[in-house]
Image 1: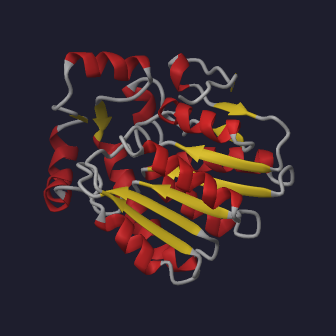
Image 2: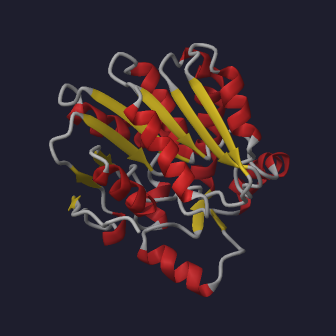
Length: 265
């Protein structure tokens, strides 16, 4: 059982309270910036934030622009807005810590790698959890996106139960995703992630679930193979099917590896 830590929340109008960005700062010399995924929120990272704080790592958990509220709010944001909002949190903490790490969950890892290239002199390392580069049903999704943009405004996560939908709303996550946002998501992967990996020079820890139903684990294998700018890289593919590696049954292993990576660099 991980002891829950007191969090300093930053309330935002139009954003569910569980989705508010927060920090846990206790004067440590190491900072971890935990970055949630596409259509996710900081709530997804509460337990990991508690774990790192208990182990003497200060934590900042941003909210990406457009996330945490209405579908209309998300639709009004772009990939540039997402990366700019994350960069703002990084800039606020530069010069205040001896070491700074990005811990990116899902698409949060893609954004983290992009900013690491821009601020490589300031980032000590990156932990990538369930990075998406290749999605399950990739060809079908890309084939249908241009048509979907014409005939639909949003895509509904059809597999969710009523309870799931209620919980997602309470946590500020989305069960309806704007088609435009999905296009921004894919464009960022194509124009940045796939093209920039060789520019990463800092240490990297990569973790993925083998039967991830959202992001194909080949994404992390591709990432690892193309990190030609660093020799300090580590890959773990877990025998579990959850996309959310943070809530998966091997969470203790994931948290331990994350902490070891931070403490050893």
